[in-house]
Length: 336
Ligand SMILES: NC(=O)c1ccc[n+]([C@@H]2O[C@H](COP(=O)([O-])OP(=O)(O)OC[C@H]3O[C@@H](n4cnc5c(N)ncnc54)[C@H](O)[C@@H]3O)[C@@H](O)[C@H]2O)c1
Image 1 (cartoon, rainbow, N blue to C red):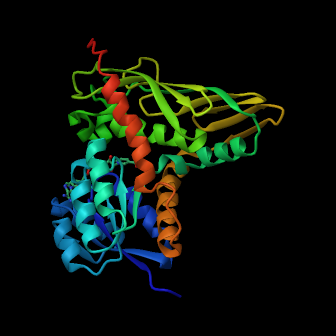
Image 2 (image 1 turned 30 degrees about the horizontal axis):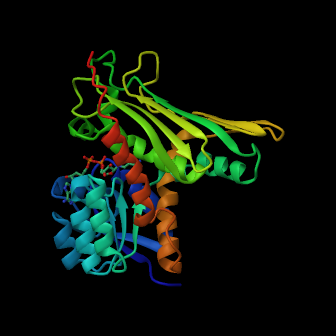
């Protein structure tokens, strides 16, 4: 048996409960041996919960002092590039949370600088959700023929006060309220990446971003019109302040093909046409699996030398679409 991959985790915030549960599933293949967060209490709490031997209050100190093979970066986006650069100087493999950097330009210069010096995968886990893997399998098997149109809707009431006057969208991740680039860079980046995974390269034809909630610094609604390489139009409608919708995010995707239609509606995936089918999913299990599968893919590729599916170079294509949305979509700015 080979020795486990020794991993240092930079960040001990909300998302790391899911990272650490994913790493725990790797058993003898990988172990998180160190954790660093300037919030020392948060780092100590995670270390206690997940049996992590070493605790640091800075990622730099962890990289200098711990014996590591890889780093898992789960700090806020503005610190990603700095931590990736430090890890690259030590030749460590890096799994970095999305977005790789706050802007496309910063991400590009980071990728150019570290290319060839470290293995760098973006922790883009949405496409690893089991229902998107199954959907990709149906598409690749030709069950609906060629996709001619598509529509994704992501509508929530998360920014409408609940009975206690709380905004559900911000209860889980309060930092989202403070982001200049909020809905597209923080949330829709996952869906854009997933559409690329399912449909291949996309280009952005039209974007309209908007802002309603006074609690949010950045945009909270978006309409994006993409086109696939075969000119199939794909519409994305997203809004976090929609009356009558659930407070949490539910993915809805319709893909219309030449021989059938696939509809994902929350926990149900249906294929209609010549080869019908229906699958239902345990959503909390799928959420946990998306992190575990992304982490397992990282460990597999580090061990085998195979390319990462979400390599930084590939993720730049997702970031290009995100950046284009901000470049062309800033005009609609009505507040209620
Ligand atoms: N589905 C997903 O993949 C998903 C979900 C949530 C968050 N995220 C991403 O994960 C990252 C963190 O999000 P979160 O929800 O945990 O945020 P959070 O605000 O809950 O936690 C961030 C943590 O990072 C710490 N930190 C700040 N500067 C640091 C530094 N230089 N080095 C190490 N730690 C530092 C903070 O003290 C805090 O504990 C973001 O990039 C976010 O976009 C991804």
